[in-house]
Amino acid sequence: MEVATDPAFQVGVNRSRSSWALLGVAFALVMIDGYDLFVVSFVAPLIAKDLHLNFGNLGTVFAAGLAGSMVGGLLLGHFADRTGRRPALLVSLATAGVATLLCSQAHSFGAFAALRFLSGLALGGLLASIVPLVAELFPSQQRSAAVTLMFIGYPLGAVVGGAITALLIVYGWRNLFLGAGVVTLLLVPVALFLRETLYASNAPVDDPQPNLGRGSFMVLFTEGRFWTTFIASFAIFCLLLVTYLLNSWTPLIAARSGFSPQTAAWCGVLLNLGGVIGALASTLLVARFGVFKVVTLMVAGGSLAVALLGSLYASVGALYSGLGVIGLLVIGGQQNAPAISVQLYPQRMRSTGVGWQFAAGRFGSILGPIIGGRLLAANISVQLLFMLIAIPTLLSAGAYTVVGLLRQK
Image (cartoon, rainbow, N blue to C red; front, side, top):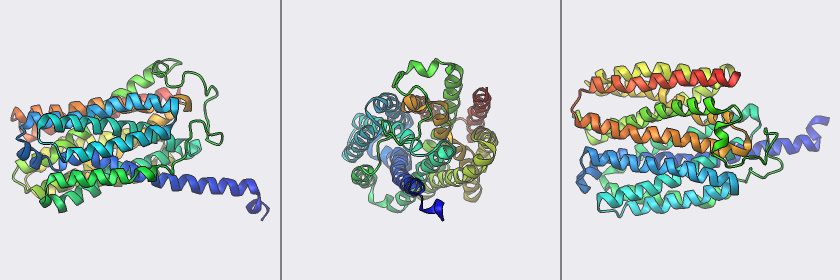
């Protein structure tokens, strides 16, 4: 009874409840980010027809949003470590909403690609700000689970958004962008509930030198972090190359194989639904075995599933099942990448470090859709395409194994 009525205990309970409530707010923001970045792939056949785009143009449009996200992660992550996580988050969210609204009014390839770059830039800043902000609300023993749970909103945004897209696609792609932009802007006041953690006296701080090197990119490669940063960057580069290639081109490959636009849209939904289930399951495994071992095994198993996917396009059921397994292992494993990034860097450089890791991943995600477009334009078989995609998936698993060993040392 004495413990339950102790003021310090009550403060701890209230702070814990507040942290989990704010995690829910962050979860909603990440959901919007996930849908906004993937919405182009869901309606790619309609956009290509309306704007007269070929495979190469579509690959450029996919890459434009991802390139913007890479630049935004680097620049706005640096900004967030200097001025605060919340200001960078609010600016990013508002910019993304406006850019998405304007996409609905684009009538040329150049205008649409430019607006997708701007939207991606803002979304990159959102992720670089919100991951450390949420991580710093929790003590170190809860940090990985909290960040991974928040990031489940990313594929879930694609799942929910993809399902909505499949239902509303008859109203045209422009109305879908209009709705996504409005919802994004409506979340700006919601983001005000997130409290700043960079200078908060009650934030869990794990860095004995909180004022040294804040926001400096070079510090990510000094103080014994060079190989950890380099190999972790390579791991997320390979992993996002694969996941974005799959998310960008799987619906279009399905349509090209003779399936209906609705079936093609559901391919993206099932891929990301598997990611949601895999990420949820991984949080239980991470608590027991550690994030590095779990991610390594998931991604390694996923590489085998990717290699076999090309042989499953003969029927809808087999294709859906294969995509669900790939989502479970590859995308589910990928959802732990932000939690890994948080573990690699102390508070004073956490937004910079997370932004750098996201930028490395975005570089892979830029190349993924472009490589996919070039391979499809070369008319290689679907079976060979997915066997090639399995190679970087396996390399990512190996790289995360090495990072885990380096961190132990």
